[in-house]
Length: 182
Image (cartoon, rainbow, N blue to C red):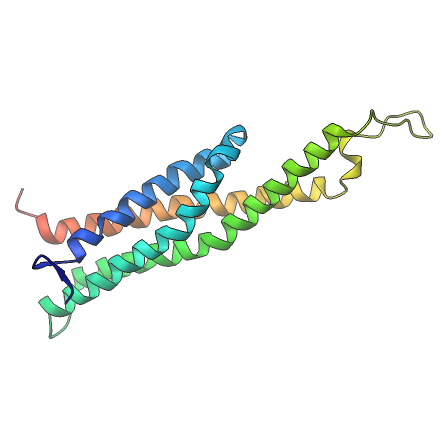
């Protein structure tokens, strides 16, 4: 079992995913629902999307070592449930990685298309006398909006699910240690 100053690593390591998931959820929701701030929080959220699963896995790994040390003949049901919650959190965070980068890439493309549209000359008149919409030079605009909406819903679900799993994992671990003593 890995220790730091003769203490098991797991009670120390669990704090990283708790903090990182909370930051990821808060900044991720901000990114999703407040488009004007996307330029400012985008890189932070991208880093959190990559770092948070590693922190969750470190907690799982250290928890397995601690559980094997404390219960060499097999884990009790509460420990197994706590372990399972940690793995559900980990796999939810792993699933978030491609979805997040697809959504962010589509958003970047949307912003680039809007910027190009803003620099173009005034709309030209068509044969019927209507004007051509501003984003006529971006034929992917409508499709991009639909796909961004779908990916946005998936990202939203994964963010909320991550918050749920970190709560479940933390609560089950706290119940094992502190349940009945306070």
